[in-house]
View 1 (cartoon, rainbow, N blue to C red):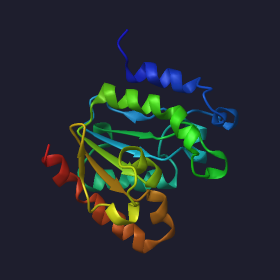
View 2 (cartoon, rainbow, N blue to C red):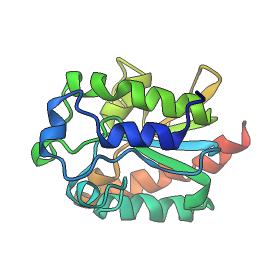
View 3 (cartoon, rainbow, N blue to C red):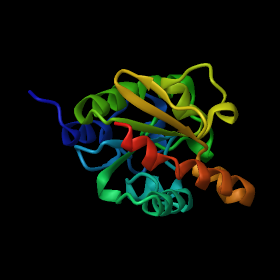
View 4 (cartoon, one colour):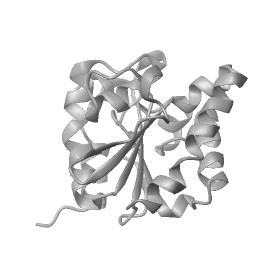
Length: 184
């Protein structure tokens, strides 16, 4: 049977591979177009995402979606997902074993979509594909080619909610995305 984003999403919604399932209201498989050339990967769902079962719909998500439109993309042209598909309690960082439990889902989503540009949002998302790097060293400054894709690490939008200076940095970094897309 051919894998599809719908099949993966159905599996995510009933997943019990780690303890995060015990506290979830809804798993958050991801959303967007199946043939998106750009995929955004965050760290994990927050309270609003857990409530709605959709990625990046809380305050951080509003900022991300605003920035996507600001650089001339449409939300329908991208895919948005997370490294873990269920909300970590108290919005704590996802644990390595939780990331490992969800990894096959994200790997399959990437395989189905085959995006040309992957934008990691935050250090946990970046670590998945670019291990050993520091987000503060590479955010928006360094683009990496791996497995036929370009990777663009950015700070997580949540950082910008607490620091206007970081918001300016994030916006400037995001403005580089259209040029990166043109390279493909």
